Length: 226
Image (cartoon, rainbow, N blue to C red; front, side):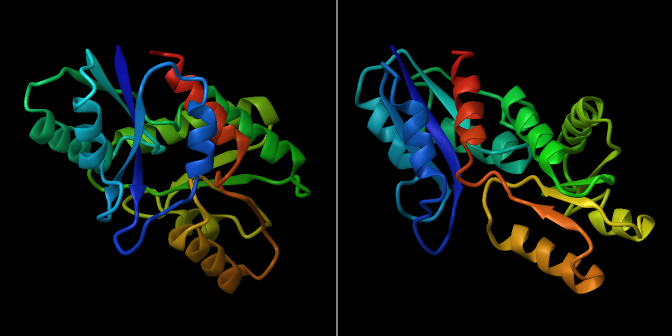
């Protein structure tokens, strides 16, 4: 039997409950043990989750990163910590992050189609200066949305290269802004505030994935792979 660990980012200073209910809903039909493990903070940690499943005499642990793109947390932190705790006691595998699921693309397409504005779309993800894959995947998502909606979709990052500020400068006309984040947290709010300070209310800023049924659908899509 397999065991599933849903891996969330978490918060250093307090227990993050964002999207927890969606994960529980997505997991309700599982017939195998599962845990939720947080990468940051001292409660409900990734290590707690692994120790819990190690005690259940499983054949394999499957990590499902509740992250959008494969950057440092998914590519470095998660496997390193898994190796340290599991230490060869149990095989494991790490599923792909959620950004390239059909569920996420469908959500973005629906968002754009329902937007009041009819202009170009600015698609903003977190970004990283360390890996190329997140931007490559973001471009793939942007191409899907553009093909489905007939809109020009400009992929951009908050951090690293391909910054969203460059797109804002190049496009003085109103934009549909989709912040591709899992939560309406600090960075998502900062992007909104920065855009409003620079451009007023001319742009239409769409919701993040926080507590959206599409996030549950994306989780189920990845679970379907195992």
